[in-house]
Length: 156
Image (cartoon, rainbow, N blue to C red):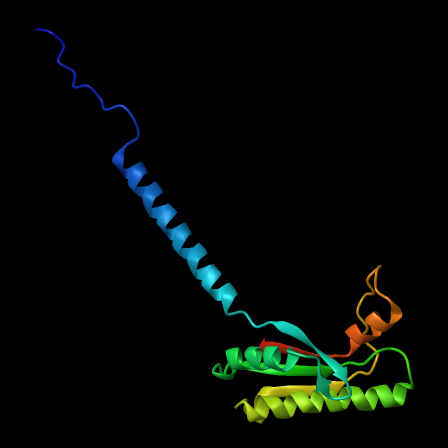
């Protein structure tokens, strides 16, 4: 009687293939959720001023856009930091930077941000300058320092 061995299928067993498909699905799901979470991560942005407490053209609208993004999220709080250039009297710069922070604070409250979500609104004068670009004139550099930084953070 001839040997009647049953031929074995060539390739991987089904359980290995099924395991690989499931693992790939889990990895894809985790990656997708990570990307969704990244999109909702709080951020920090600078908004320039032209003189005094007047925003540079278009900057107030940009600031309001950021505020609108987070006003509906009660889990987000804000730090506001006013800045000025580094030239001039330090005391005057400190006062001006505080006025800029206060201006943005009031704007946020008017847009519907609860005051208790504004964790700080401080002016630092010229105490936190940005790096100077190699091609910037002194005047351009000083203008770039006139700004308010809004930092959105998750509340505990």
